[in-house]
Length: 111
Length: 115
Image (cartoon, rainbow over the protein chains, first blue to last red):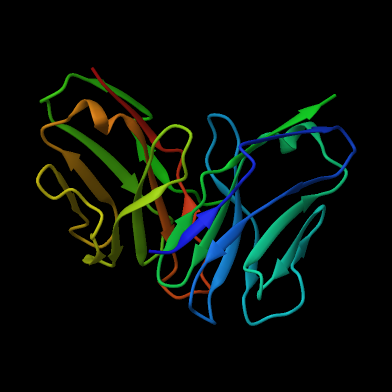
């Protein structure tokens, strides 16, 4: 089974500031996908961003960007210009034939 | 925008009782997934359907859990009998198909509490 590790149980950020969430994974595959999902309190999980392992360019979606380091098996998420609506649990996930999730990082945004 | 529907949203039951959860995926999505999410943890795949066929149920506790997707559309997950350790959020997700490229869309989940 693939292992996804999120070493930060909680992160706090001031509104309009930047926060970076860490994720590492373990795999022997060369072709796979990585995702960040957001799960707001009492709301459904939604996709934030995804990265194809064969692409060297880091994915970006508006204020969300990733730093994908394939050799280091690292996949961090940067949230820029943090907004109150960004408060949620964030899950890193690895996909080759199924999604394997990390334990999550709770992000709180201070007004 | 189309969404994955789940019901009920909340369920409280006593141990040894039977419970059932329902999921209606986004129209046209061939692949359907059931996940279990224990509080404070990430979701774990229980079962995956491609149309009406099970393609992965390796993590499904088959002595008490069952899942079906008879017509390849909506799906039911059943637990009989429920145990205290089954208390969790049960998430349903769907995707167009099972290839890498397809994003999984999640429903709001059913939160189960077993007393």
